[in-house]
Image (cartoon, helix red, strand yellow):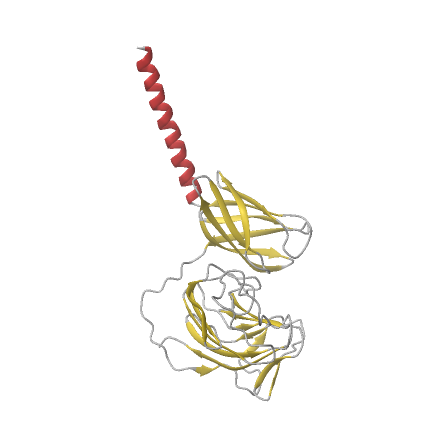
Length: 314
């Protein structure tokens, strides 16, 4: 009789722990994925992004993109009873760890970010769209989005700042650090041809839909990295360094379909049909399901662009 009860207790114990494990797994499943965030910061709504991933059978890890900078790894994400919490070291600003805490309710993640500089900002987030395309695309004719004469069809990222961009001799020039330049037209899927030239040590970026930065930087002779020439900043690393020396023209052909991007730089396919996980630092917003502009980064260094042409689906 004693052994029977003992065995029965063992069975009940196993069932209890099994149900508890299933409950925890289901609890974790609701937070796993990619999240498009909006952060209320100094009177503005700035974009941010979070990914939570399963690591083995117990731990959660992830990646975080602030309103600037690159994707940063999260060594451990804590999640219990709808509350998510993690910390990461500073990237550029401040000296303290950044602390992130949110509550998931009805599919919306809301909470507070304590920055590395000690400031507190509220945020809200929703699951990021997958942007899967199931039909074959037939492309229309290429059309120029820079007329070579003036800045018609473009506007500036900050109306309070003085624009430094000029059109001269068929070139779109950024002679000094200042505002970013944004196309008036918005795009979903497209093929973009664009040519860029920069002096030694300079830096710019081409933002696809205004959200995903193709890094433009004097990286000649360096090993490829996601934060160097031709990379999707902080996410996708080119398979080779295709940059010409500074002062020469760099020719890009970029195809973006949903989240899938292909980049040919100076005739070399450096990123081939890769998935962009989420927005990069400096994006105009985190509304990934919507069409967006072409944005040229002008807040770093001198740069010139020309022959900017785009094809869209018929």
